[in-house]
Image (cartoon, rainbow, N blue to C red):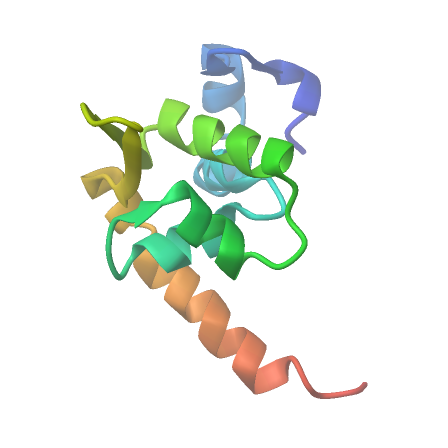
Length: 122
């Protein structure tokens, strides 16, 4: 089992990568997608670049602080771009990076799984 304490601000330690090679990929992906809204933000950005308010409107119940935090983390992990246009008032758009685009098939599979099993009661 990978211990969360082995994840530092720079990511996984080299020791952790070496000791847990068989599950490192899954843990890495989970780590960069951790956050209640990140999957939905990425899914929404797969269609077009979006402005902050467009994203906030689509994510029912997200606070301004939570959205800002999630967007910053996605940007820091290299999954989205933030482009500021030199206008008054400033216009900011978010879009997927090539790395972020690589996650879309995974998110699409999550969508299919949810559609298939989401309404079923065990």
